[in-house]
Image (cartoon, rainbow, N blue to C red; front, top):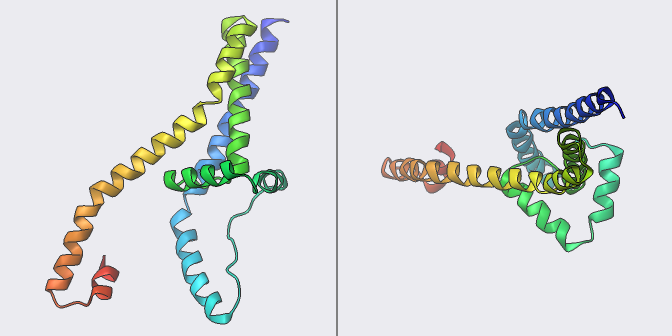
Length: 173
């Protein structure tokens, strides 16, 4: 095949990865509002005797992937890891990101290395890229929590010293 074909394949692969990254980051913008809405909505619906509604829209493919892996233990572990990293991905979407990253890095490795072996090694490495990203996000979230914990405790203690009840002190934080 000509080098022009490989350039086109590489550009398409990078475009797919870029669009996926944009979609994931776009979800994070309203994360706090969604959570607060779910909490307040859950309180209202529990009082009314209704089940809380999920506010996240997913595609048909993502729904089918989630249904396919929902009964397995590894899906629960992945879900916990994503929650610890504060990523708004479902298990099916996360597994799809693994496949997309593997294919994208396979194509890029094949294009750059001019060898199918190099492409295969890059593709296998692509399987680990999403996991490394989740680990990095988990460490960052834990570091933020550690940095803010002392300040939060000081605010609660100062509120209690000022005569607030425990609930009032926690609400002020």
